[in-house]
Length: 281
Length: 254
Ligand SMILES: Nc1ncnc2c1ncn2[C@@H]1O[C@H](COP(=O)(O)OP(=O)(O)O)[C@@H](O)[C@H]1O
Ligand SMILES: [Mg+2]
Image (tube, helix red, strand yellow):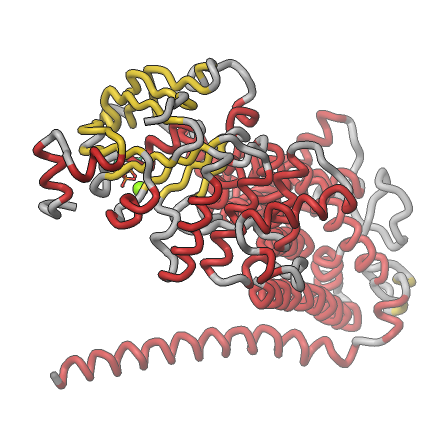
């Protein structure tokens, strides 16, 4: 029996190593950004727009990018939601009897999920030319909206798929229509999962550079209209890091911290929402 | 014996899942305001038969049927009418209770709202009425707005009964409704069926012989997708015609 114990120890040890290296990696990433960026975090950084241009200017902040990113991601999430929610409900209620069709849709969504965001950026760019839209908040919202849709749909689909068949059947058995089952039962039952999927998609959207690179443009001003160019945090990091001026490079790290904190807040709220929900149920 | 009216008549019913034939030439007349019990070993198609009656099989991919199910002169298996309305004529109680993700009150009100009844003033007395009918009122009157999931399994099953009754069905379909329950909750449900049959036609699937003896008026014995024997309860238990029925009653197979 000694080898069984040994086996158990080895597996345990391997688990320990992988958990430890994951945590170490996370800390290393966070620390490297925080050490470089924290000295440059200031109230000015998050409350003002840049002065002297984002590329050369050493004054002001990145409020334009913070606001731009929030607008962009919110817009993209709303756009994506308008398609994702009906699609995932249809996949799990209306198309219930067509398992093959649903699995094909899932397959396509998984492929879309795997496509790198730069491809969505290029697609968005082509679409803009085709529709005759300039680089703008709107173009960015459309591109990011398409980019995060597979993530959102599959996130929602995954929770809806796991709703017990009995529950759906009993809702039908009292004479509900498919719409009633979808909105009064399925939606209620899966709300926390849906919120999680939305926040996950939001996090992916707000952190992505490649999809906004050609589509939103960049500006030092706060966005005032969806037809105008807008700054975003990932691009703020990208451009400032590319500046030859060391102070501007440091501001890139500060911007990265801001972006990271926004994403951390989202991730933590996802956790809290699902925990709280489990308590109610 | 008193005159019986047939409430629901199953005629030459066949059902396939893909290529596999699950129900084979089923013919059953279900008498009005009586309890008809379906007995049979597990896997013989009892649940499928129930789900065919309220067209829940439609939700399962690959199911195909032939034959007729006549309810009040209408063939509900092939009707072109809205299936949701057909389903409202039957309340279904499944093996495990399935409370909807909402409060106790709203679980019962769900069915009422489907029927177009709106507003607290109209809903409240009806919710109470159906909770009383399901023998649950006294236990939940003070916590109607708690989530239904907080109830015990036995209470949840009675809540499902109340929800089913709320759509004002004529038939109650119960598929081994007590099999997941403790003996006390099970006997509460059983007793409720006794009372409910005054106003409802009840179809009950069970594998508990004692339960069948106690509440059945008519018994149908199924085996491998076929009806082997159907008879009045006394006739069925005291004088079964088929050898297979006798074997089953003696516990030769389950
Ligand atoms: N959705 C389905 N697809 C294919 N076969 C099924 C499906 N549902 C049930 N069956 C089969 O139909 C037969 C009858 O099942 P069921 O009606 O659940 O029996 P019972 O309720 O009497 O135990 C079983 O052999 C089962 O495997
Ligand atoms: Mg069954």
